[in-house]
Length: 211
Picture 1 (tube, rainbow, N blue to C red):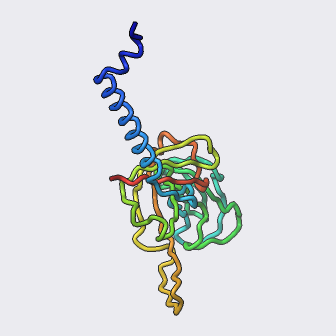
Picture 2 (cartoon, helix red, strand yellow):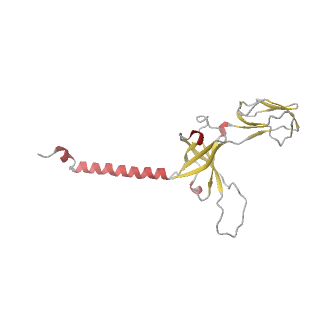
Picture 3 (cartoon, rainbow, N blue to C red):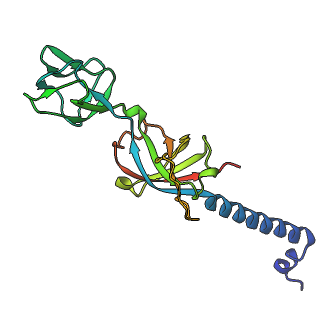
């Protein structure tokens, strides 16, 4: 008697279907391999935002500082008093530095308070020009990790690729070996979802190339 289990696998339509499934699995594996291998790693990165310096309009003696590092302030909040001048915050932000030295004389070029706007936090990395810089485009998808939370992976996208290197000076050399310049990459992410990130935290970036 013919074995029914054996006979069904000998039918042409079953063999064809099996072949299609195998081809699909192999093709999917190749695509998956390409997807995980087509990224550019940027190890030297950190969470960062532009620093806003608060200083007095004219020279004067610092009398009081009303905030401390880590404080969250709203626009219009008093930050410090220099003589008769009250220094106020122009935005909602986080204090990252205070010069808490009452009695010291400050002028307009000296920062008494430094703060950031948390909505402007970005993952900022540097990459050498020969390490895949030419492949990175604005809008490319990104995954990144933060050293303080190394078991989690976060997502974002490339917001900016610097037009000039970090050291833009021109150096002439008689050597055939040129120095590889470093460029800055900024990655935008959902700051409202990742509120635990702090200015200055170390991070690592993977930029995925869009086809």
